[in-house]
Length: 529
Image 1 (cartoon, rainbow, N blue to C red):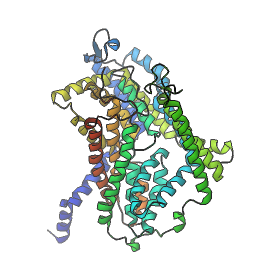
Image 2 (image 1 turned 120 degrees about the vertical axis):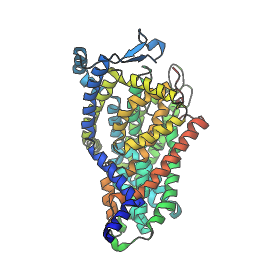
Image 3 (image 1 turned 60 degrees about the horizontal axis):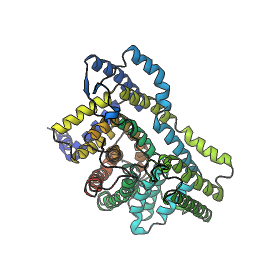
Image 4 (image 1 turned 180 degrees about the vertical axis):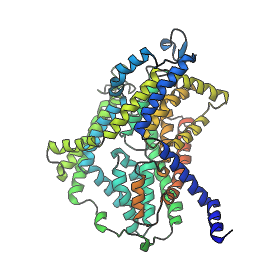
């Protein structure tokens, strides 16, 4: 064997070589998947064919729903879409499947409000003020925390915070890639956590609700259903991200080699918000505080106008049912006030232009929702979701996997699926109709199941080549290290995924099963028919 062949063989057998081959395999498998829009179209066709086959075989299960919703026969059969009645149903419901898909309207309404705050400059200024004014010892923590909070404004964290974090680390004499990694971890691996409700909350709740209704037709999951757990998750993920960056990632990167970088420090890009921007941000902050006071007055008193008029409680109240409207208001109004004071929004036309700009970027999402809505509706109409859930729950009981440990497997599965199917809504639209009813039959509430999904869906974003911003982050990293490759970036981010999934899952277990705390506003832990 020649020396060159021996070196090649050794490299392939080394841990780095095996890891590189694993990552290459993940990328190859991911590339085999069609576009998510095509995937949902194909899945919809598959449901039609499968329903016809299983119906012809007479597949049926005992009806697990409450007695008042149970079928007269006591069993649930697979309904065929490969029939004349099935064809009629498809033809008459395609439009309403789309327009009635809950995440569509809720996300668009919430995004309209967020777009005002984003395009006025409020969110960008707040992010810069938070990071640039942070004490030196807390810079890493604040960067990760800012990344988590930036998720309320979609791509803002990727476009603004990540390059800013790299420059801040560079200016402090630290390795820029460590700053990039810390921000990327907060923005992407901490995607679902936040102190505030954002567009992801009504999006996922709108998918969870029809999945839960396969078992309980009256069940509704609200956008606020995971809020308490996600608030706690924000600080835990920020702390873990701080520890991984300072103790693992930055020491491994070593000293920054300026000669291998094409990026020169641009001090102008590190300018703190000017006096006018700070004045505008204070005005926006006071406006936000006033809105919070008004909301508090509407729900805290026993006779609050946004409490449930029948029970006097918060459950089922206009406050919780209208949480998407509240998201719209608390972003749009302070955003407009900021824009007015800062001079970025002078008339109503500027506000409308900001909204229109955000809506114009939603074309792909709307196309995805159309086909995802058909898949979800087909799954529900054919009873395939209920049948699979009953059979799956029976299997888990037979294997004695009905305790909290089942969530560990569920979170791991979601994390693995996320490597190839990076969209949170796309993945949940596929998995929710099976796993929500299945775990409900084991006695767990849909809100808890959704919270567990959000952990698995988030933690592997930073190591997934299929993540939509992965190429952008790679290009940013290449400015500081010319020879950086996909394997280098994934290896740098892998410690975050590993620590986050362990720490976040542990928090979930302690929060839900040890402390018995609700994951959201008046949400149960266990499902009781």
